[in-house]
Amino acid sequence: MQYVSTRTSEHRVPLSTALQQGLAPDGGLYVPASFPEFSMGDFDGCETPTAVAERMLVPFFAGDELEAELPGIAHDMYGFSIPLRQIGDRTRVLELFHGPTAAFKDVGARFLASSLSRLNRTAKTPLTILVATSGDTGAAVAAAFWKKPNVEVVVLYPKGRVSSRQEKQLTGWDRNVQTVAVRGVFDDCQRLVKQAFQNNTWHDRKRLSSANSINIGRLLPQMTYYAIASLQVWRETGEPAHFIVPSGNLGNALACIYARESGLPIGDVILATNANRPVTSYLDNGEWEPMETVETLATAMDVGNPSNMERLRDLYPTVGQLGEAISAVRVTDEAIQAQIRRGEEKWGEVWCPHTATAAEVRDRLDTNATAAKSWVMVATAHPAKFEDIVEPLVGHEVHVPDALEQVMKRAHPAPEIPPSLDALGEIVLGVDTPAE
Ligand SMILES: *Cc1c(COP(=O)(O)O)cnc(C)c1O
Picture 1 (tube, rainbow, N blue to C red):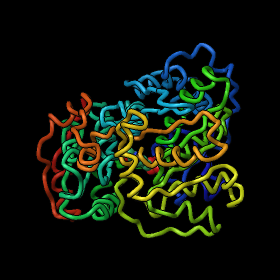
Picture 2 (cartoon, protein in one colour):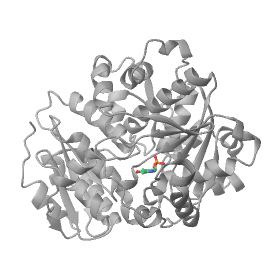
Picture 3 (cartoon, rainbow, N blue to C red):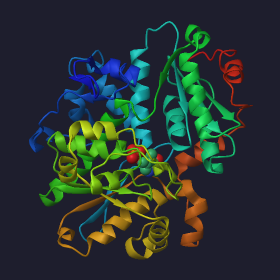
């Protein structure tokens, strides 16, 4: 399998190159050059999530230097369960929040950590991953790379602009993971990362790479939980699964679409968005225009210019084609609050604000014929991560999962810097963090 840039179709690289570069040299995003055509029988005997994941990823690893490592990588990626539970008539929930940082981003981060660590096994200097985060991504990347050999991570977060639980998740690490609190906003953190990439001193001292959501290494592993869930629905009902995916930067939804392209038994894919409207507007009026980001209760979906739109439009070049492949529904903060308030009564579930958008979409389907299908709501995070929002609405405390508790217990204050590359350099380049 080769990976092609969305901007120059002649530019093709093997998987390992795409994983290490992140972005293609022409500024485009890497996409698979083709999709395999699986049939259900191909997954006979695959009884565990790891087995399904490994089977599904075989063609995507074909011919790459990581090919022989796939079993180990598939094993590293799912060190936790991904339950698909029936919670109502023709309604299931796919819980993607049982990993160390209690959100689906753990799956992609763990795949990337395992792959990059293996690729750098014999490197003389470790690979340094720089991540700017507004909360969830940085925590997932830190957790995934912690104690992995031959890779180190520097996480930058805006001091005072993440929730206290998010801050604890970002700072519960040591050894090859360094967290730095930047006195500024998320954009300052992102600017520092870009400056470091362009700076000669940094280049001389570190081999830099990134782990943000434009990396194809986040999408490939995410396809596998759609394979696992849709095969389970297929085995139970003989019908395809229809997914409702809470979406912001569109990486999770795209993984679902890629799984469907690969022949998995997936029917409708509905994107649940928050009040941010780039996707719904595009589908409505056919004009693609990035927008200012609107702040909502589902903060991890606050994206005005989703970068994976470039991949989606690569697959479906016209708005007509896209409209046939997916639909999208916008959900307001009021509806998110109402869904969290009613979640326990209606479904016996406490939703996080992101998952609540999917619950709202599921509710709206009841009024039309599409209700007669097997629906899967994708639960992207555990509600305990957003206790400030969730607890007042449900009227009681939300139990914190053990994995999350463990991370937060280790939290310690991170060094604080002004938003300048010099200050970051003093901390990061001054200290060499030997890998284990
Ligand atoms: C990142 C995130 C999303 C949005 O996923 P995309 O792949 O960016 O569309 C939704 N919910 C949670 C909890 C997230 O962390």
